[in-house]
Amino acid sequence: MFIYRRKEWPNFKWDMEVISDILANVRHEQGFLLGRMEGFGFNYQDEATLKNLTQDVLKSSEIEGEILDPQQVRSSIARRLGIHVAGLVPTDRHVDGAVEMMLDATQNHADLLTEERLFGWHAALFPTGWSGMHRIVVGRWRDNTADDPMQVVSGPMGRETVHFQAPDADRLQMEMDAFLRWFNETTNLDPVLKAAIAHLWFVTIHPFDDGNGRIARAIMDMQLARADRSSRRFYSMSAQIRNEREAYFKVLEETQKGPLDITEWLLWFLQCLGRALSATHTTLADILRKTKFWDLPGAQSINDRQRLMLQRMLDGFEGKVTSSKWAKITKVSQDTAIRDLQDLVERGLLEKEAAGGRSTSYVFC
Image (tube, rainbow, N blue to C red; front, side, top):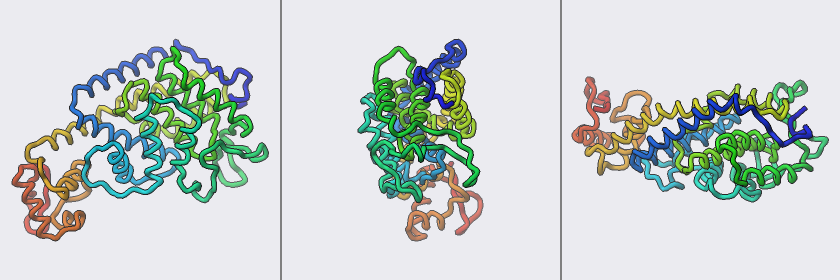
């Protein structure tokens, strides 16, 4: 029996003794991270926010099997937040829609979550009204009939495994009214637990034709931003969920087919969040290294081509950086590329490796 069919629905319950220690540890890690970030400058905080929001958008889509272009996502976020970065690229409306939803959820986390706001997110995710080869109902609740239930399935056609079947469409308005009322009310419930419950509750209602998982994770991030009391994002829960995708779907399915006791879901969610916070330390160390580089005197007043290529090198340029590659990527002549590189050598930012001539490659000092 799916949990929404139980007469106690949606009165979730859990064993606080089982989760209390890990909840306390997660809240401590959150506080430590936010306190640490306050000690850094705005440029560092901007870069950390940009990186983690980019990961949130990319990985939340990847969980559903949709691959977005990382440079487009990063460029779209940077433009909307007014963060100056090198090498911004044009973006398509599918990327912009996914970014628009995530930024509204996290940057405006204190605003009420409303039916109209959710419809806007859904329309942003599907700007053409199509999902793959399927036409979908955009910007309103799904209206499938009871004879055509909303199901999550896998396996070959004719032998599909039904992992979940959502509530009938005629229940959606009542279900969403109850969910939004609960989400917007002020309670004594720990805000991190509220993020976990909101994710589970929304994805169980499954109110849209498509995009329910991505919107559920946007709601989760909105509530985590409320828990942090900050629109800046210094960790990515969606990136960690992507790393644990199989376990994520497994615990969701088991919870949705179980009783109203959601202790196991909360336990998994908190453990996953704890791992997301731990992974952040490596990410922030990398950002700090980049920020220190850009603060070097030699990195000031360089041209846009140099900034673009240095950013690529900092991000992990594949292969050797040579003048010919520089010319090709930046669309300049070989002579201009050599002048750009020689200027960076004189500034003390790059140095030549051993080989000479056109095969000469450049690395950081």
